[in-house]
Length: 283
Ligand SMILES: O=C(O)c1cc(=O)[nH]c(=O)n1[C@@H]1O[C@H](COP(=O)(O)O)[C@@H](O)[C@H]1O
Image (tube, rainbow, N blue to C red; front, side):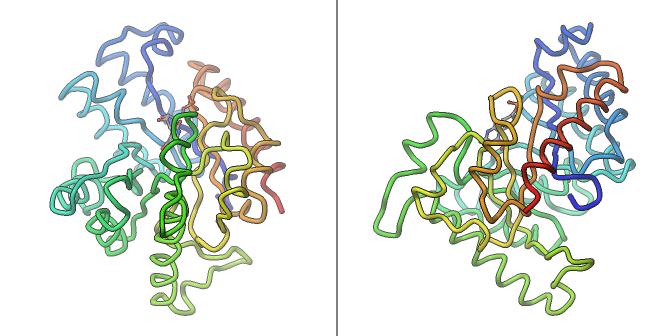
């Protein structure tokens, strides 16, 4: 984020985007699209976020393309956030953790998205394995879709549901950063962030404020989808994140991908997204 700007480019090979790029909606089209995005932005973006759904819909060969994309990003030196939104009981969660967060796993990524609605603590196997292998997770807290509020704003005896995710992530990161000691303090004036990030949509308006969430206290990265195609821009990012703005990684998929397939056009769209995010997120 410090080196390349606070933007993550989603690799979401929607059928409509494949068509727009002049590609067929098949495994070959999927591969050319996903590797084309990487060729254009690899090495010059904070992270890419392949959306697993659009690979899985092509079956086993689509998942093989996802493996190839993750390996290509690694070769380009670009971090990957694999968007799989997994969540299950602990013993099954251990299987998901092994699939995405173990060194040498075919689908290993630098981070994954997790769904905490079986309880934050059900994510334990993924939290622990990510910490051991130097990887990260992004736990859904306030999602960008309008339906999310019905669950995430709900109040319980322990505070709002979103608030429980904020508290869980803050506790995990405090422990990890304390264990890291002075090495975990950060360098070059950039504060270190722990391995547990949260997903907080850029479209969530005043919810962070209304629910009394202290996002800065999380001391982890905040993935902010909703920028571009879902309508959020610089003003929304600034409103939602307030004093936690330096932790934000703004995520955009269609907003950049629609500019393709020419690599220079994708890069121009990325540069514009980075300029807007930097302006909105600089404290
Ligand atoms: O975890 C995510 O990335 C995510 C969380 C969320 O709250 N909202 C959200 O849109 N996303 C993902 O971010 C991407 C958004 O794509 P665009 O709307 O095209 O920028 C999709 O892959 C979504 O699945």
